[in-house]
Length: 109
Image (cartoon, rainbow, N blue to C red; front, side, top):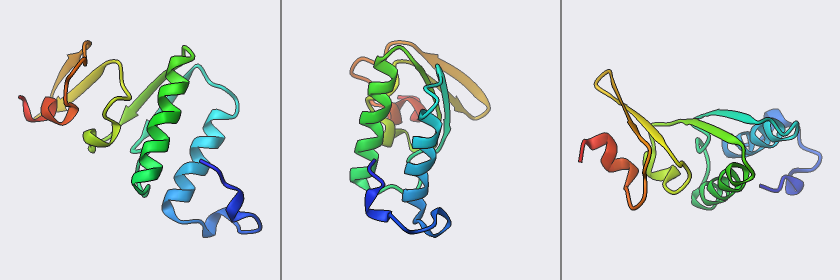
């Protein structure tokens, strides 16, 4: 999530993925106990998604809470400890995700 290669450029000129990285960095600076993210992987390439997942797992492992809203469950695989899936207007909570494929939860498998 390094930003140094964009020195001198205005943030408004960043790519979508770079803006997502910057927004996450700014959200983490005050070290909030709770972090709420909406589609944080938007605009990220596969390496960026992997880096995001690693960053969020490390943040969570330090005792913080990360709440993620996303439609792309496969891209956050391995990040959440618990999951609430809303499907056809109904919510289902899953507290043990050991060996669970998140995308399968939405499909009802």
